[in-house]
Length: 133
Image (tube, rainbow, N blue to C red):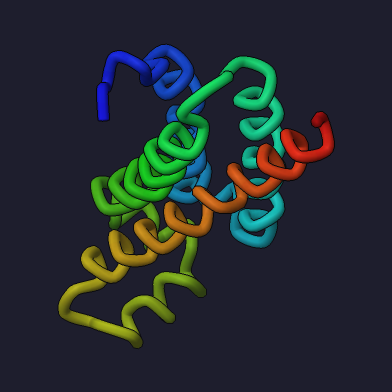
């Protein structure tokens, strides 16, 4: 794979959503609405990629989706004490799963969210591309 074919500007622009979601999570602003915010962000990103990319779309989706999950998790891990204070219900559940390694659990959840995000971004693009032909 040649990385010259990857549009780095688009990846950086869309990858920032993961950082924003991490900040929203740390501050406790997205407690009940986080899945809906992720779906909304995935829809916007799918449309943006559909309009601006012609090739290597799946590779872009993989990089963007994984960066969303990792970026979001890293922000939560870096500000874990604030995250605990602003999200007491989820923090208690997290500590029930693993009281010794809650940060590792957060990173694992971030990776899973990233993998799910890959498909949430790619499937609408795939459908739009098939319907366009």
